[in-house]
Length: 401
Image (cartoon, rainbow, N blue to C red; front, side, top):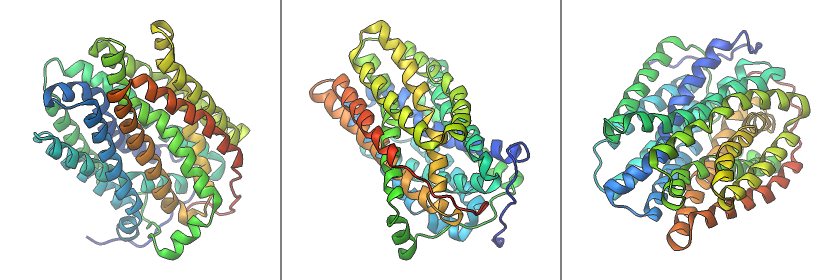
C-alpha cells in the first residue's frame, strides 16, 4: 500500500464540509455503540456466565485499559499510516474483535477480548478529532463537534433499544456478530469514499510528550474528561444492573428507559455547540459538570418516581459537556499536536470514568450497595467541576492541520 504525502484539507464552513463530517460521525457511532452495548447486555451476561457484580465491573475495566493502551500509542500508527488509514484499521480490528467475542466462553477469555475490543476502538478518536478540526474553520469548530458528538448520544439510545428489540429472539452473541459485520462494512466504505485525512499524526516522541506535559491546561483537560466520562460512560455501564438488581425494575423496562433517556442528548449537543460558541468553553464545562454531579447524587438517593426523572435529566445535562470539552481540547495545543493531546486526554478519561468508576461501583455493590457508589461518584463530579474555572485556552492563529 502506498501512503500518500501529507495533504492538509482547506478549512471551510460546516455546511461545505457536511458530508465528511457525517461520514466521520457514522464511523464514530459504530465504534462507540460497540463499546456501550455491553452495559445493557451485562445483566444477561451475568446470568448466563454466572459472574458477580464485581467481576462484571472488571470487564469494563479491561475494556478501558485496552482503549487507554491503543489511544496513547495511536500517534505511532497515524504518523505512519495517516489519519484516514488509521480509522480504516480501527474499524477492521473492531469488526474482528466483536466477531471473536461471540465464541468466548470463560471469564478470562471475556476479559481478554474486552481488552482487545477497547484497543480496536481506541485508534479512532485521536484521528477522528484531528481530521474534524482540520476540515472546518475555527469559528465553526463548536458546531462541527456538536454534530460529531451526536454519535455517542445516539449510541446510548440505540444500544439498549437493540437489546430490548432483539434479545427475545436472538442470542446476545449473534447481536455482536451483526455489529462486527457492520464495522467491517464501515471500514470498506470509509476506504472507498472518504478521501479526507491524508495527513499524518504527531508520533509520541519524548520531546513532544514533554512539551505536552509541560502545559498545565493539558492536565486540567485530563481531570475534566475523567469527571465527564465518570458521569457518562461510568454511570451508563452500571445503570442497568442498578435499576434491575437494586431498584427491582424489569430488564426490558430498564433497557427501554436507558435508551429513551439518551434521546435528549441528540438535541442538547447542538444547543451545547451553539452555547459554547456564544459563552465560551469554561462556563459551559463548569455548569455541565456541576449539574451532572448533582443529578448523579440524586439518581442514587431519590425514590422511584423522581428516580425516573433523574434517569432522563442526568444524561441530558452531561451531553452539554462534550462539544465544549472537545473544543477546549483542540485549543490547548497547536494544530499539529491535536491528535497527540487527544490521544492522551481521552484514554485517561475512559480509563478512569469508564473503567475505574464501574469497577468501584461494582465493588461497592458487592459489599454495600450500587447507590452508595453512585452518589459518591456524583459528589466527586460536582466538586471537580471547579477545575473548569482554571481553563484559559490559548489563541493559536493556525487553522487546519
